[in-house]
Image (cartoon, rainbow, N blue to C red; front, side):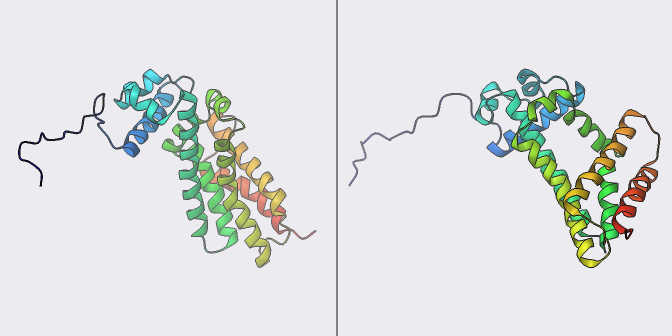
Length: 215
């Protein structure tokens, strides 16, 4: 039996200030703040101090999740790629047939230039500085894979169904992506002025001809 005079054991508090947020929310705030800083600075500069000021967090909070500013940018790039890649896959899967699915893929990709919010994110995450940070990393490869995977499935399904009898998915996915990215470049730079619908029709005119014309 414990004596009533025995002193109470008190667990000491850990050093430092208590966390304001749960770990996942803390990390999310850092990523959101990084994107905002990149947007504000046209994608060219984002210091740890700027990120933490935007997030309202301490240096200690930053280093609980990331070692460097570059780590944050890579994590943000990967998260954005996963989010848009998932959206792209769901929209394509909802199409009624391969031909419609191809149009959906092209139109959604063009949203990177024609949809204001997506265009802002693309401008921030597509800057030369971000490109240098993510080049050759898993995040960069994952981003590319998530964009083309739905298109490759569309081409494979179209070939199997006889809708795209001339499809060569492994090669055509690269060609169609390249044409689509060129149309995105036209829109972002103003080299060629087309509406989103006109740009989609232009890409599909070449793509569908190559996929369906019997040689």
